[in-house]
Length: 509
Image 1 (cartoon, one colour):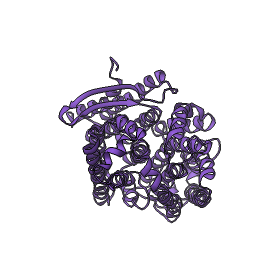
Image 2 (cartoon, helix red, strand yellow):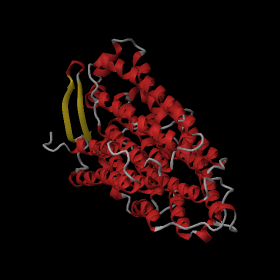
Image 3 (cartoon, one colour):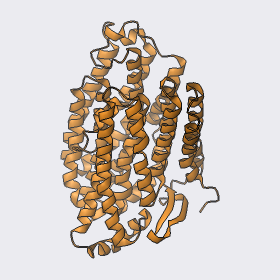
Image 4 (tube, helix red, strand yellow):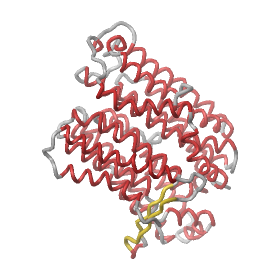
């Protein structure tokens, strides 16, 4: 236990800012953005403090906070942090201020927009740091509220339909997950992730679940799996994502793809992997096919898009499916402690962070194109933008090549480790998934060529380049792309002991 509740401060400081902004509804755009940025940056500031005292060699949870909440149900307010949580905490600390600074000024009702954004930020942090299902699920569901209103109130022409579709899909999946954990609690008497994982390791959880019936472990696993699969999203539960990302305002799209999409895969690693190892291993061969479908079909769907935001949205499905590919390949193999398993899992965690940077940067650049052109964002609406806006072209090009996995940029490291690991575990899956790599190269280079090169045409004529204020939000993301591309060990050393521990113990036959 710690005298200073650092993790609670990380979660609730953005919420304090959201409350303050909600009490100041008439605050102008400039003050709203400044106030929101101050509270949003608290995550990065406090996260840096956590990073300074973090010991990567400890594979358990650090900075734990645990207090009784609902004693009758054995519900605790339980927070803790390991290497996985820290990586996502730092990602949130980077993406949220960038999205707020880059988009709040141009929003109608800037105070409300900023308040909802801070509420969304705090909810995501609660998911990454909670270790008891009850508060974890509260944060999980609360993240839907600001995301829905950001999308519906500030989105495009189809925003209302996209927002409702987003909420219905996610709540529907969450209902199955809630029922699964209710049954798990009925058998085990606890919602605590740490206790449930320990019970799964020593076999006592399987014994307790067997008292409900021989088929209950599989039913509970499927319920939790469905809730997480919708959130990632995993093929074929992905259909809500393209319209949601395309219709959301730029800042919300940046946060949705950069942070919120990681909540689903985080749940796979935090819930399914340690609590349901046997069930995950049994289902992994089938799930591996779905991951391969997400990699390949997500990329080819992006190849068919003419709307730039939908193109980047389908690209996100493709890139997040790489993480699922790694997890399911390791689960299906059952090769504990194998070097390929360690490589695949390390790559998956790195891919989460690196995709967050590149996808958020791409949505920001597409938002610039849309704002400059009066709402146009078609692949054929531009031409020769590089001649008119060389700074935008250069920075967007870096983000595109990062997403492509160019060596020297951050996107290469995670993808390389994933494919290095999966080739050793499930060669057929890795071989088929390379088709997704090919399609990714084609659609990203098509984006680059049609929008920025060729003769100046369409909305590219008299296109104004980025101002200093518009460059500032992109710079941290671009710098991190180079830093992590050239020195990936800065991030990898935070997770290597944890991933090695995972691979040495789970999942086993």
